[in-house]
Amino acid sequence: MKICGRDIKVQGRLIRVGRLDADKYQFLDDPRAFLDDLRKSRTRIDIFTFMQRLPETAPKYSYLMEMDNLAVLPVSTFDHWWNHQIRSLPRNRARQAEKRGVILREVPFDDALVQGIWEIYNESPIRQGVPFRHYGEDIETVHKEEATFLDSSIFIGAFLGGKMIGFVKLVTDETRTQANLMNILSMVGHKDKAPTNALIAQAVRSCADRGIAFLVYQNFSYGKKQGDTLSHFKEINGFERVEVPRYYVPLNLIGRAALRLGLHHRFVDHLPEPLIAKLRELRNSWYNRKFQSAPEAS
Image 1 (cartoon, rainbow, N blue to C red):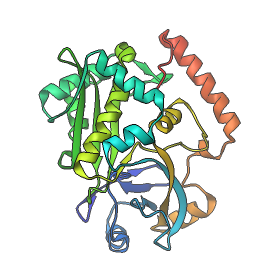
Image 2 (image 1 turned 90 degrees about the vertical axis):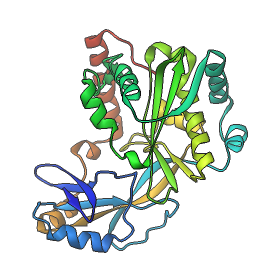
Image 3 (image 1 turned 180 degrees about the vertical axis):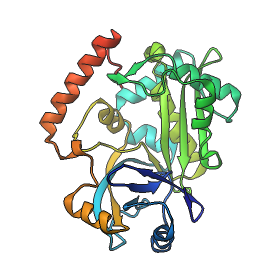
């Protein structure tokens, strides 16, 4: 559905929670007017949630609020990031990519890019220990998925001998204050060439060239999970955990009751982290046996 020119995504059957389809990529400058229009819509939405825009991390609004988090890299110049913000390991890995012939460049959204993304998506059925949701998609589906937010997207490709072995899709917010890594993925078969490290470096350069102040790599951590290989990868590349207000606004009686009972969170979010970690370990082991494949490290 579309409200005030914004696409809204609604999830849940019992409790219907709405958010911007571009949540974490675009933001509300006038939430009160937006919420007034949302209440007038015919689609049932019990709760609407939205996040505050960087760099404002102190709560601005009086709605029910919980702190969310983002992995944020402050960007000034590429040289400053290269010399002062990252650790030696990712710096050496990015150099390794260059020495092994990996070429980075911004690319237009066209059939060649979609073909390259399709090949990357369909290289392996499992990534990071779980089934990869894009594996098996046809090229038309990949085109539709990657064609979102084209007016605010920057695509970067990593190429080896003319073949794309990794890509990034950056999506900027309306003020071009921040760019979020919507996609960053490389071929497992070329992991030894460190294309992902090289893609991060080019993403920083692309932001610096445009005066974009913050590069965001989704959440720094998810749920109660305190750390894993992905959060470590973000940290050594200069990303910091930044707490940002996330608001939850009830739009009806069901929404108010759900918020009081904590039903706006998933059931798994109420479980203790040691139990979740054990279940995650068992899940990964099962998938690895099923696909007869070792988990891909970040």
